[in-house]
Length: 110
Image (tube, rainbow, N blue to C red; front, side):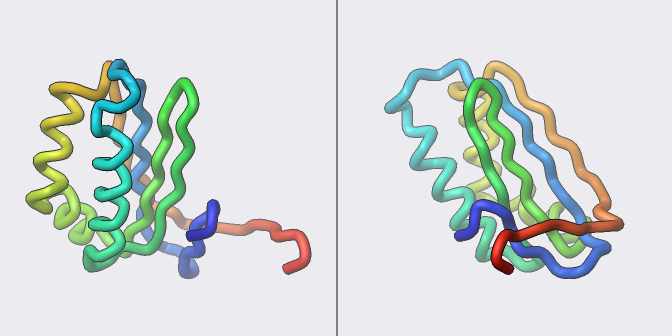
């Protein structure tokens, strides 16, 4: 997986998940996060994902439409992970859904 997602021409949607964790390493978070990415990739309408974690966690997933996002939110394993996140892993989080209307970029050598 590339660090920067390859997405189609807009429009499409971005789900921006910003989080601050309070749990300690070894609490199962890393395995659960990797599993959620694997599951999201199998969801209808999934386009790509980008993630970075330092003091704040930032995961941006890209989707074809709002129905695809709703389907991912309701996916059974994801629902369970959401509950576990609130109970065990997160001090706080924010989720934003945005319509991507324009995109451009640069790639050295490309």
